[in-house]
Length: 50
Image (cartoon, rainbow, N blue to C red; front, side, top):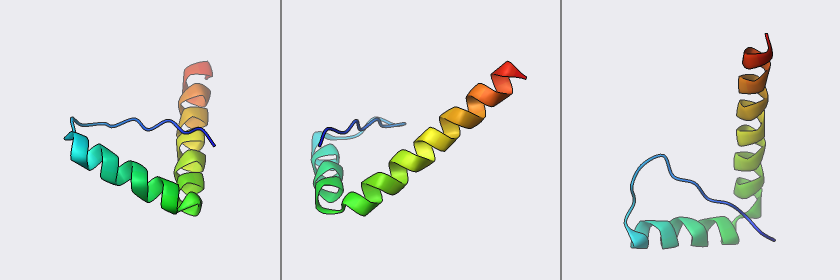
């Protein structure tokens, strides 16, 4: 499974590794974050098209 992790702040490499490990060990959390991101993109696109 491929995933994309983007950060809204600068993070240390150890923080990124820790967060990636959490995502690998908890696919439900990854799915929830993905759905949230898709919903946000949908909302932004809807606002732009209005």
